[in-house]
Amino acid sequence: MLAVAIGWQLYALTGRALDLGLVGLVQFGTQVALTLLVGQAADRYDRRAIIVSCRVVSGLAAAALAAGTLGGTLTTGRILALVAVVGAARSFEGPTMSALVVGLVARPLVPRAMAWSVSANQAARIVSPALGGALYVTGAEVVHFVAAGCFLAAGLLAALIRNPGPARVREEFTLESFFSGLLYIRNNRLLLGMMSLDLFAVLFGGATALLPIYARDVLQTGPWGLGLLRSAPAVDALLTSIVLARYPIERQAGRVMLRAVVAFGAATVVFGLSTHLALSLLALAVLGASDVVSVVIRFSLVQLRTPDAMRGRVSAVHSLFTGTSNQLGEFESGLTAALFGAVPAVLIGGLGTIAVAVLWTYLFPELRRAGTLER
Image (cartoon, rainbow, N blue to C red; front, side, top):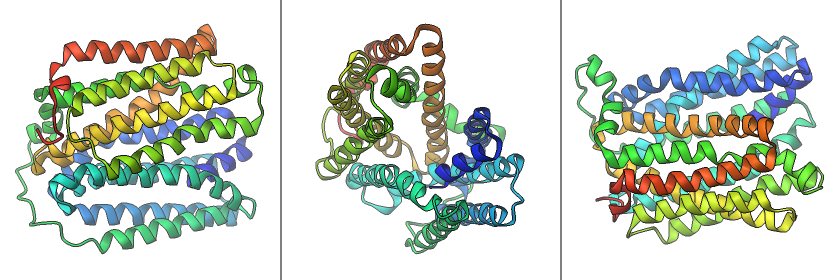
C-alpha cells in the first residue's frame, strides 16, 4: 500500500518518471550498504526485538508521510529520505525473519513454514496494491495512516512470539566475522551454486518489467488486460505455495529446483512469442508457479543447511542476491528492449534462463545431487 501511495504522490508532485526510478534506487542502495551489518545484528541480538524495532520504525516513517501530506510539507527529498528509512528497516527485517523461522518450528516442518510464509507474501502482493489504490481516492494521508497502523500491529504480533530458544553466544567482532557470511557461502558450493543460479536466472528472466509494452503493443489490450497480466504470476504463485505447504518437496530437491528454473525460462519464451491474451496469461501463471517452487526450496535449503550461529549473516547475503537480481533483471529487460525490441528481449531472457540452468547443472553438481532439504 505504501509503495502505491508513494508512487502516485511523488509523480503527482514532480511529474518526472525519473523520480519513480529513484525510489527503487534508494531502496537498492540501502540494502547493499547494510547487508553485512544486518547479518551481524541478526546473529548477535534478539531476532524478535530486531523485527519489532523494524516494524515500529516503518510505522513511524509512514506516520511521518501522513503528517507531511496533511501539512503540505513533503518534498521529493523528504519522501526519498523516508523511503530510505523504510528500506533500511526492511533490510534488517527480511533476513532476520527468515533466520527466526527455524527456531520457531521443528526442522522437518521448515519447508512447510517457508511455503506458508511465501503464500502470505503473495496474498499481500495481490490484495494490497488494489487496496492502496482504493484508499488513495480518499487521500494519500489515509493510505499512509493505514500503513502505519499495519506496521505497528505487525510489530505487536512479533513481540508476542514466544522465546524461540536460548540466547546465542556473541562472538568477538572482527573483520573476519564481518565478512563471514560471504566466506561461508563461498566455501559451501551448494549454497553458492543455488544463490548464483537465482541471481543469473532472474537477471535474464525479468519479462514482467515489459508487461505494459506487451499489453498495449503486442496483445492489443487495455489497462484491464495489463491488470490481468500483472495478477497472473502472483495468483498462481499463491496457489502453488499453498500446495507446497500441504505437500512439501521431500526428495530430489536440487533436481526439482533446476527443473523449475528451466520451466521458468520456457514459460518466459512462450510468453514472448504469444500474441493471444489467454496464452500469455497461462504462460505467466506457469512462470509464477515455477518461481515459487524455486523460492521455497532455496529458502528452506539456506535455513536448514546453515548453522544457527551463522544463519543471520547467510540470510542477509541471500536477501541481497534475491533483491538485487529482481531489480537488475528489470533493468536488463528494459535495456535489451530498448536495443532490440520487447519481443527479442523477452526471448533472449527466457533462453538465457534455460542456458543458465543447464550450465549450472554441470558447474555445480552439488545442486543436482541435493536430495532432501536437510542433507
